[in-house]
Length: 206
Image (cartoon, rainbow, N blue to C red; front, side, top):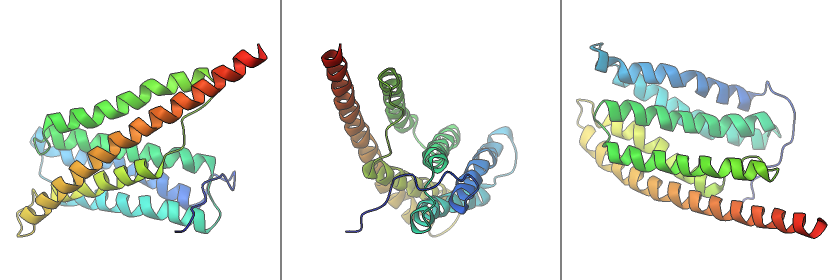
């Protein structure tokens, strides 16, 4: 199995991978406007919203792939990539839940996971650590959800593919949700180990 490089390799900001991540961030408010416009009696733009979601998924894959291949892994990129992921998931949850496409309790489960992680960040910060690096499991969970939401939206279109897309989307949603929480639990375990080690060092030097 190929070992993926994750250490910072450059301090450049304007790299192709970073520009892809920035483009994904720009797409978030556009997507949210498109998906919510029918709620305010505007025309349905689900096709365009679906296209933006699909492009965000492709760019999410490309920015990491190109950064590793071209030696352009940067600290900025390590911050932008998960930020774009979280914003797309959050905005999609808002849009699909508001439209009644996604049940509110599914949204609550996913939002609770991010709230759980956010509680750990101040604890790590007090011990001199920033946010921990996104794990492979967390990335896999995000990929599942990023595939699930476009398929769920595709399931709302008037097309023969709508029903199969909806069925597959729910398979991705359940698998992604399980992985999402599993990654959060492992994150908490790692944070606990770091805090314990930091406390032990402080006690030994004190």
